[in-house]
Length: 172
Image 1 (spheres, rainbow, N blue to C red):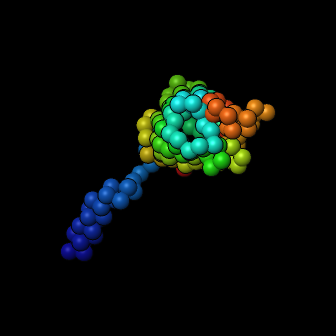
Image 2 (image 1 turned 120 degrees about the horizontal axis):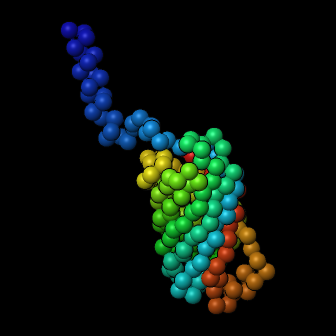
């Protein structure tokens, strides 16, 4: 009798685990961290200026210095787009869809909300929604790489391109 109750409780608990998003780590789980890289970006719609507006941003870059990761991953290339809104003063934010093509031939698709500022470092946590590490998250820390013409572009016709250094990335 006691054994059948324990089995019933275990079965019920197992039925509720997926409903709360708790489950086993997948076989292709990501762990470890990356220590560098760069994200280059270009913005359409006149770029980013001192007046808030919507813009689409294209990303291209690389992640490097990865250690403690599975399957021989040491880095990879990054690309994707963001539908952002904001301005040079307060930064831009919006949904992002990125793909990382890892050096071992696998990919990870990242999705979430991304925020970038001109003057302060940013920490963005996005979901790994497909490929290597699906179901996990990655935290990406960045800092802007300003150029002497950025301020003039912000006050003028708009900043249409730039780059942010990846200072660290952590798999969760």
